[in-house]
Amino acid sequence: MSDLRQRLTKSDQTKAKNNTPTPRRRGVDTKSNGIGILDIIRLLVTLAAASCGLSYYITSSESLLWGYRPWFTRWPVLMRYLQGPLLLTPEQLTPYDGSDPSLPIYLAVNGSIFDVSANPLVYGPGGSYNFFTGRDATRAFVTGCFQEDLTSDMTGVEEMFMPVDDPEEDKTLSSGEKKTRREQDVRLARTKVQKHVQHWENFFRNHKKYFEVGKVVGLESLPKEKRELCEPARKQRPKRKDMK
Image (cartoon, rainbow, N blue to C red; front, side, top):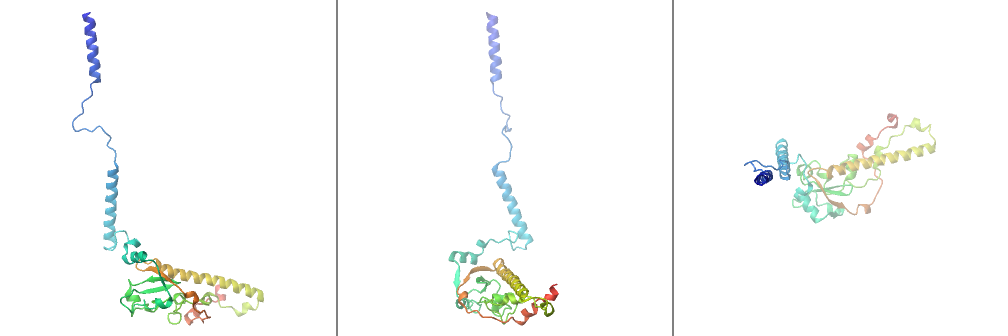
């Protein structure tokens, strides 16, 4: 009986020993040491700060974002956005030519008005391109005739891209063939005019200093008339015989 009691006592001691939790060693964390969300956020913030600092250094203190400047960080652009687009007639646009220091300097291309006040040495009074301001002078942007073509009237501009016919070749063509060729020349020339206009419109719209403020209204009601090409534009016309 006493032997049985001893065996039971030893069995209970063994079970108790096996069930006793192992004590933690001081200073040792049994949890996983993986990267947490806060570690990722710290890393991203550090990289962003380093990128901004490097951009500021490389761009000679001009930009923290490698030259990128969101429109909403430009105060004049933001104010115009909050106020809404301007709608000006050609007459209402005239005073914005830089002659009044209290007004911004505007010019228009293809009916879109752009604020060029950031460059007064070029577009302000006495500037080399001041004649573009206070008006829509799309025609001059295409032809390059800054004296004669300071107007939005594009009538006949496509002629500067139409080839000068070769009299010898014309003798070999029928009237129908000449008409078909003429129609094709007109289509191609008008496409080139549109590309030139779009180029200048995008130049001002995408410029880091200039921005769009509104539209010119009433241009369609202005009288249209056949205008002779200015001399520089006439000289640019290609010769058909050279095109071959």
